[in-house]
Amino acid sequence: IVSQGEGFVFRDCDITGFDKALVVECPESNKRANLFRKIQFLNNICRLQTGCGIYAECFDELDVSQNLFDQVGDSMFDQGVYIHGTWAGRYRVSRNLFNEIANCAIQARSGDMDIFENVVFNTGFGITTGHGMTTRGCRGQIVRNIVSRGSWLDGNPLACGYGLCMNM
Image (cartoon, rainbow, N blue to C red; front, side):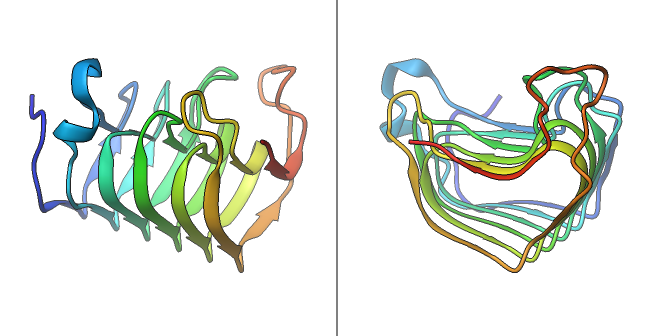
């Protein structure tokens, strides 16, 4: 277990069948003091996760690029990439392929975001922003993404087929 650090790179991995492919979090006592400084999650395959592909909070800089997220989640609480609302810094989610995600392909609750050139198929929500728990919303840009074929997976009542959903 690592509580803080700098310069983590996860590259060219096949992560199959776990609850979550990557979790970035730190102790509740002092989130700002225990930040992860720079994390890169590049060119990986995440498939058959029963929870989230990536759950992230408590970071200063995060790059999630050129990954495949396939068949992730089995409930309305599961996303491909989930940026938590408590403490998030600057992040980029780019050039990923999301297919059959139980709820949101990308849920960006807080922080400074750049979400661009992702392809999203067969999800309840394509990309959602805002609605943070401690911080209110996020800022940044969502550019050149393809979001197609929203669906209800496993009868999930919240998977309503929204391509983009903006919350405050």
